[in-house]
Amino acid sequence: MTSPMDRMADFDLTPEQREIRAFVREFAEKEILPHVEEYERLEKYPLDLVQKLSPLGLLGPMIPESYGGSFSDVVSYGIICEELARVDWVVASVVSVANSLVGGSILRFGSDAQKDRWLPGIASGEVICSACLTEPSGGTDLGNMRTTATPADGGYRLNGTKVFISHARHAGLFLAVATLDREKKHRGVTAFLIDPHAIDGMRIGDFPMRTLKRDNLAEVHFEDAFVPDEAVLGEPGRGFPVLGSALDLGRYSVAARCVGQSQRCIDLAVPYALDREAFGSKIGEFQLIQQKISDMVCRTQQARGIVYQLGRMKDAGVERCSMESSMAKLLASQAAVQNALDGMQIFGGYSCTAEYEIGRLLMEAKTLEFGEGTSELHTKIIAETMLGMRKG
Ligand SMILES: Cc1cc2nc3c(=O)[nH]c(=O)nc-3n(C[C@H](O)[C@H](O)[C@H](O)COP(=O)(O)OP(=O)(O)OC[C@H]3O[C@@H](n4cnc5c(N)ncnc54)[C@H](O)[C@@H]3O)c2cc1C
Image 1 (tube, rainbow, N blue to C red):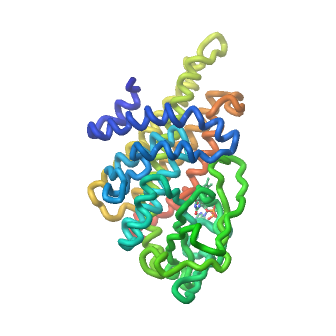
Image 2: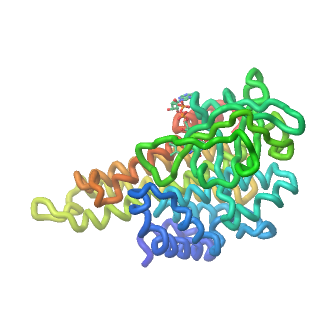
Image 3: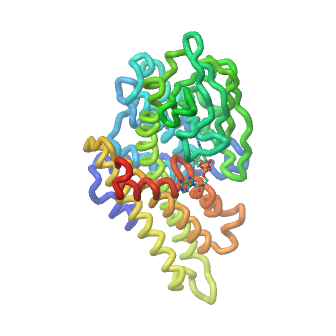
């Protein structure tokens, strides 16, 4: 049944985009949602759930059909990320890393050989992708990275450590960045496509998290690891434009995921407010609870509106929309966190029990305020663009 929120969310979507939402929602609620809490308890990576996306074409929505993808428009891609994230952070993250960060970068900057080698496997789910950017010394100031790439006969030797790396233990392809010369800051950064099965000196280690254990986050160590020249994505020393373009689409898909998480908080809080009683009334009859529901709905719809608008700009071929990507990511991630907080307040103490999902959503939402640029970074990008200090 269409909810009052779908009425607005779907209003100016095409019939095909509405169908995609209905299809992904039904699939996600039936095939993924029932397993998520159990996988979290077991700290189990949802590889089997991810594989269910493949026959439906949901693993490669940004990959052209000639490479086995299901190439959709950008708005539809956002809707897929939104609906998957509404049920599971990790499954949605697999799609978003594969299409925005890794597959999208190969499409824009890769050679024909790199496209032929990697894109079909990404679209079919044979190759899970991982992006190695963040280092122990920091993830925001990427121009100051310490992982080095030293030219060697026929390639480069990589040395350094990356942390917080999602999907690393299951990945068949890593997009990693390293610097040719730390003095050159962002002009030294080079992007590499790394096959973990064809490299010596790359080691994956534990990176223990307090939450989101089913993602199996890891450290990735490069210890004199040799990568051939053919692994360079784009040109040596031109990794920053690769990163910029990857993160531009990445922030869009993260923002769409945040909308899905915000929506989930509403989906959980509304029936609870209609069921739970205090002082002889349903708590949903109290104005202070109604205020929270109204705030949750308004901020979700506001975030959704800006995400879809960004998707339409990208579909229209607007080359640069960094400021808009930052706005979408900033607003949507803040909405997801605040909705989780308001949702928890509605559940009272039960929000902290293992019985209810809402408490888990808070930590998941908070991580989305860090990944692919923190809120502070996006605030800076928006302000600096408006002040003419950077190109938008
Ligand atoms: C669940 C999860 C999954 C992740 N997955 C990946 C992944 O797959 N691959 C990957 O590479 N990384 C991943 N990350 C890492 C994430 O991208 C980084 O945490 C993020 O980029 C911030 O880096 P940092 O944590 O080192 O914070 P820092 O860069 O150390 O920043 C610390 C604080 O200082 C603030 N700050 C920094 N510079 C400024 C400034 N100029 N002005 C104002 N404030 C500033 C930041 O906003 C932040 O609040 C993941 C993180 C999480 C939590």
